[in-house]
Image (cartoon, rainbow, N blue to C red; front, side):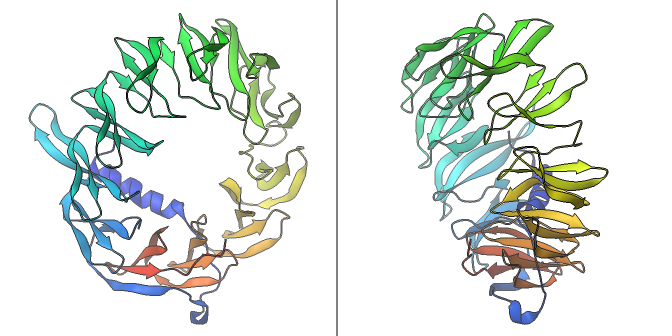
Length: 430
């Protein structure tokens, strides 16, 4: 459920800072932005631009501005999300004496006209073309056009995945298609979303897998199972408290033995597992071969683009998928996301910059605060002023703003003093 407004504002400000960022040289000749709107807008907060609109907050209500800063949709709502595919989720809070203020969610178009009335007490994200909604305690699904594709009639429901959704009736779970037709009967105690053509289901506390026709492909014989990822699924066998996890393939064959206290999904051919007897956490390949141990590198973050940040003796470096040190220890901090499009954000001498996968410095260590790239640009802070840079480290917007927020739709909002403005960004060269 979406948060109340005060929480939304706090989260929005934090997300803004960590959603995009980076910078280089503050010289005016490097600037490549267009000033779409001077810092004259009197709002308390401006959100992400999407489809030419950005949510704005003033005097306790949300509305939307266009890219020139004009208020296109009045501030009438108690909550407002960015537009996606011509529609945005909004909410209106209603004072119910017994429960206090309750948010009700609806859907509007880019003119502010209602596509779906604010009748829903829950409104999920659109996935697979439909969003999960709740009305009068029951769940159903709505399309981006605001029409209910499946009426609100289920006790519990999950998002659609691979064309089917797990839903509950009379305390049993089954699956429906996007028309609401029951495809797999309501016979399960647990049912997960489909992944790689199979879904985890459980009966009598035993887990197995079915296909999209409802056929049991892998028998319900496990104490636990997780969805398939990268061709393998975590499964567990044994009797409590001696339950151990391993990995099975889509035929149900155990390809990595049931010997771990905990096991996590494979991604890019690598998975994190935990082993007892003081061994601790390990990274393994699909063969079960160990490539790195937390005992050797404390801690290890996730792999991305074939490298993982590791720390030893207080300094960070990167290992490759063979567990070999690929980039030497020498950094005070790293971004948890690791490498993205060939760059990783790292900290040295108390300043942030970016390095390439060969360890070369791509963006110098010049910034007090630096954030991840978004749409080819990044937000950075230098001498307590905000600016924007591109992937080459060239300054796109000079370091003269008190704040720069969300990058999206070729725009970003900025703040000078207590007023907001809009920056137009050049086409990113990714």
